[in-house]
Image (cartoon, rainbow, N blue to C red; front, side):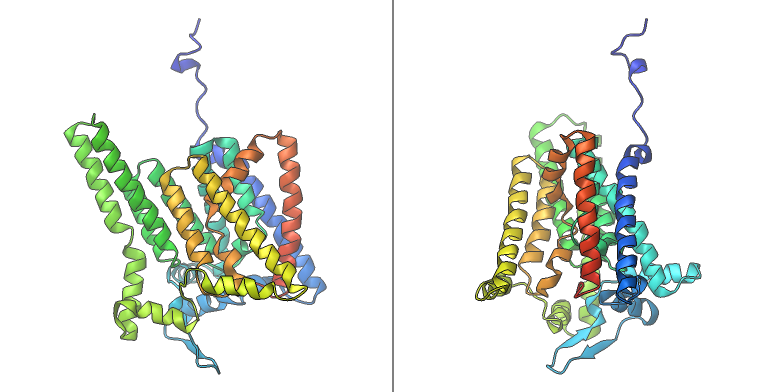
Amino acid sequence: MTDPESPAATPPRAGPLRRAAPALLGYAAVRVLGLVTLAVWSAANGKSAHRLLSQRWDSLWYTRVAELGYGYEVRLPNGDVHANLAFFPLLPWLERLFRAATPLSYPDAGLLVSAVASLAAAWGIFAVADHVHGRRAGVCAAQLWAVLPVGIVQSMAYSESLFTALAAWSLYAVLTGRWLTAGLLAAFAGLTRPVGVAVVAALWVAAITSFVGERRQGGSTPRTDGARTWRRALAMIIAPLGAAGYMLWVGHRTGKGPLGYLDVQAGWRNGFDGGYAFGRFVAEKLTSFPSALAGAGLIAGVALILWLYVTCVRQGQPPALLVYAGTVLALALCASSYFGSKPRLLLPAFPLLFPLAVALARLRTSRSALVVGGVAVASAAYGAFWLNGSGPP
């Protein structure tokens, strides 16, 4: 008889795609629901869902970079200068690549990049959560990311999905010791959005922590230890090259030196003030009714996000995830940018969803499906309402 503890009796682990299939199918179902709801809602309002997704707000800036390159700017009556140098280049590069390789227009190429990247992001979120909390939590984490109130942005020709995919897989590579892969993906994340510094910070902290831990424990052969140290060090060098390279190029192009990118962002009234402007914005909401309700909602939302982060700490998330989520959170809440865009800026902070995913995974499958389904319907309705209204700046 076969020993039940022997390797021959152990069922083989499912392949990566098969293991992630429930998460990807659930994610795709939520996104399809959101897109169908948007199409119906937009048609009822005489608007084009396709145009809302691909040819408004930031998507126009990205496609203009893809088609014409950098150098375009708009001077507003108040003196502000909106330059397309504020937009990082990886998404426009991919739009240009798909435009050249397919019959798609630039806006449709952006939608294609977003669609592929959103699935890759869902898979990466599943992989990270699966590694830390198990498969059921991974499936729930991917679906929770899909049903976020501003989840419709994941289907727009924006860079959030692309960045989240690169960040999630970079963090997964960090957690599994694939340092060179992690560094390369972090560099690409840095070419996608300014918040790429969060991925770099996470990698650096994980690499240093790993190195210190190995020095204390010992046990590795000199050859193995040296190779691992070399890979970690190289990853730390590669990781910031994307963001640093683009920012330095902008400084050279504008003639304003290494800090030239900050001047470009200042033209958009973007900066980092520690949250002062956001706090003042919330306080002003509380001075009258009914805007006080919105102010109370903002305070509750920030409190919930902070509580989730504290819960992540208490649940013992790896330092890389805590540093990454904390940096994304700080940059989003403490920036003096458009306040309406802050929920969108928090989309990449997926580790904050893990406490909810763990709680959801403990429920029976039927109950968790009911919860996710109900939230998905509400998210789809809100996304359609949001894009047909003020939408993301």
